[in-house]
Image (cartoon, rainbow, N blue to C red):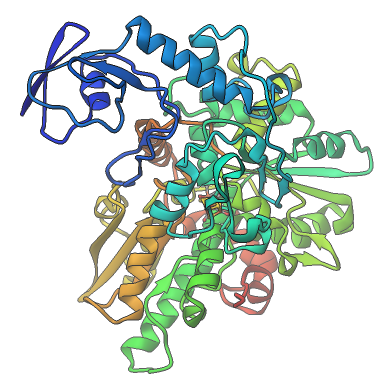
Amino acid sequence: MINLNIDGKYVKVPEGSTILEAARQLGIDIPTLCHLKLDDNVGMVNKSASCRVCVVEVKGRRNLAPACATPVAEGMEVRTNTIRVLNARKTVLELLLSDHPKECLTCAKSGNCELQDLAERFCIREVRYQGVQSTYKKDHSPALERDMDKCVMCRRCETMCNEVQTVGVLSGVNRGFNAVVAPAFEKPLVDTVCTFCGQCAAVCPTGALVERDYSWRVIEALADPDKVVVVQTAPAVRAALGEEFGLEPGTLVTGKMVSALRQMGFDYVFDTDFAADLTIMEEASEFLDRLNRYLKGDKAVRMPILTSCCPAWVKFFEHQFPELLDVPSTAKSPQQMFGAVAKNFFAKKLGIPREKMVVVSVMPCLAKKYEASRPEFAVDGNPDVDISISTRELAHLIKRCNIDFLSLPDEDFDRPLGESTGAGVIFGTTGGVIEAAVRTAVEWATGKPLEKVDFTELRGMQGCREAWVNVGDLKLHIGIAHGLGNARRLLEAVRDGKGEMFHAIEIMACPGGCVGGGGQPYHHGNFEIVKKRAEAIYREDQGKPIRKSHENPEIVKLYEEFLGKPLGETAHHLLHTHYFK
Ligand code: HC0
Ligand code: SF4
């Protein structure tokens, strides 16, 4: 252990710690703009030390030292707030602002921007340095907007994309004043292998990377008297939306969210959780079908089955593992199953053509915007899901519509596409999809009711994990990965035949699963917030009267009335998809 003194206070920290870490242990908040360390399970540490906002004075050293990159030493004496330090921080901030658009009033990140916060904290009232400002072409993809004029070269997005997600789209290009973080040859994101996971936007301190905002389209649809507007809300939204209204992370706001959507004028307030139950019917059937054929020695069967509900993960394996395209489940994601059922079943029930119905999805995810735009999910150019907005966009819509969210009563979803089970809810956190599938598959395979519904061995936040689940005499080997870098490691092992064979693997692109999605309220690097959302999801499951997807009465009815049986002709046509190289 190393002893040092910061601002007159003594502290003892492990060798190799930085001054920043030691100061945080003392509760001293040294400001930073580029540094970011997420949970050890996520493995993101941005060490670029590029912004220099965290400089401190170290006794005996001539130059100021960046606290995020300077290791502690025995007997070190550090001052974090001398006039020299404050002056340097002010200069650094003024230099950053000299090359930054002063568009705070209209910036999508206003109120959540770390640069704006620092400018306010350090009372920057003028920018003494004036000069040429960068002007880059803006990049509008279906999911993300890039405005590099607002980039502060912190490199957080690059670390996230390259080291955590291992996608490798973003890196520093050009030199000097023209240096920028961009895809190779400064191509637009849509022409790259970007998965639209949105994790770069989740860690961007400014408005350089934000979601493509479709909320105005929702307002237009709601105002159109010729449209029937249906909304579906993803499992993870209810566990995070409250944060936008000042509630503690982990507060469930399911009932208030339904109420708010109804007040906004949606004709039907439905739940993606219903479609998550439907996904389980198809995915568990597909899994048992493959497993039985495999156990009978059918060499054509590909094991393990991989979940396919996360669109960033789908895009990742399409680009990165084209030789494994027949391994993932062919089941569409719940978002897309919902859209298919809404436009092909519910619209008919209402007696309206699909063109008259607008399906809006509220998702914790930015890749869902891209997924909704994939051509295979449209009929004659009319998409199954018309508009996908993020949790953040929904919060903005609620505020814009003068709805006092906190005083809303709790209301329930409409029927039939709003009925769901606890299994549908847990989709929103890492391990939840496979637990939901296991609840149904084990019960179907054994023909006996489960002794325990909670498969806690599948839960947790470890980035790559494995567990064994008994089905009669068979031990199912289950793998779980969240974060695309972890997914890559697991998939490489599968491809290369390393280790014990897995029967099924769940993969979610975002650290923590959907609760940590790129469209959720910004957590500003505090991963504890994501963990609290996951706990809330399991609480919601516990409180549900039905906790297994196949027992959802509206799902049972949907098969009787319309779909036939899982993997049957109608189900295959509407609920399954295919993948592209
Ligand atoms: Fe998810 Fe989903 S669980 S991907 O994270 O499967 O976005 O919440 O909506 O579709 O249900 C996101 C969350 C969903 C889908 C579901 C799945
Ligand atoms: Fe990389 Fe994901 Fe950002 Fe695309 S959305 S650039 S894959 S971090």
